[in-house]
Length: 578
Image 1 (tube, rainbow, N blue to C red):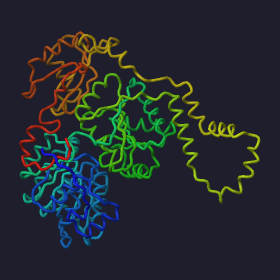
Image 2: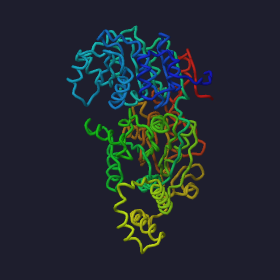
Image 3: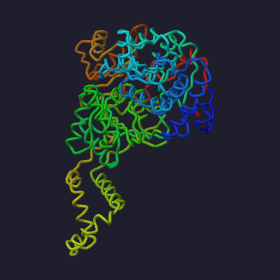
């Protein structure tokens, strides 16, 4: 792809309708973001389909929403644009944004259709006239089956966060919805990454699409700093608390892998006095809305969430993203870290890993093209020093309301006249600070020295753990081959056919998996699979933590594959600057 420098522009130069410009101006937007600068003129001036690759939080909603609004006919109540999004949160966010952009266009209505809300209310809203519908795939398919939505006249079909819709298992729903739409529509596909499932959709439902890339696929924003902390698995929650205490003004999302763990971590943080709460799929819509309103209003400092629940969260000024667990798929890390460092601001994305997971930091580095900084978990003393400085800064910056407290000061001066300035400061700090001092007085250093641990984990190429006699292995099959941990364990045991072989700690990700066997079986298992094929694909097993081991990435799945390059032959621009 060709690289082109971004020319500083304003929204006035993009050919946008004056009514929309007025609404944009009232929202405080002056300069279009790179994806808006590229996509808006293209959609206003050309008729081709579009694939736009851009990171989460780069302004994609305005990029497709503004030109669609401008080309809608408000005099007709027919549905003219359908926007599909993976979650109800993102669906609601897009609807809200488009309604704001269309503020000064009379009779233009945007309706949200998503699960977890009263379907009869949504049916009435559509029947009253909805030129633009924003929907989740499952609810949209339900409405189509009920024949409550007519999409025969749509001119625009947008797939927003298309990669995530596939990750969440919406392929069948997407295919069914796409098949019900007219052939002459424009399909606009927006995605942060380009897995091969997206290419399949493009081949079936798009006509020689133009591609616009802002930044490199699968990489993260430049102003996000990536760090990792290493702790024993049993100390993971303690490490989280230390990090939270070390950043007194933290405003973050903490990502967990499961709904159960999300709730457990949130409950523990609340019990320990932190302003935190959970967001996951088991909450009702009213509960989710309540949590999000408190988080957006900063009543909560920390939101503990699953990947699915966090989709569509559009919150400004997040200081940290904390990966309490590593994501199952590296692509999820791109989505997670993209929640901070938005709109030119900086942010920090943190991984908390145990010894068995350290090797995956290198995998993520290679995938996103960024280096992680290894950071020591703060000691109790370091946390107390940081909190003390924060307290003193807060004291210095406190505004004195002279008129309101003036009448009370003489009594206070009288009570304190026997104390020196130093004694007053000492007593004030002790009053405000005793909780931290008490908690951290005997706090142990929970950092793990990797150099001391490494020889026990990898000796002579065996990758064995001397304490447990177990070896962690990698295999290049996973969810893409419909494996679950149980199915993979059965497949490995039956194919290896080795007496007394025990396979444990099976972890299945999108296109690869990990498992443990006794050290005496490692070489035997690898030898058994040397000529093994699954679904006409060579199965490869190797030590998970072998230094320099290649990652055996699926060709055509991770990143921007050669097959994708050949299909999207009509390349436009790559904004990566590389």
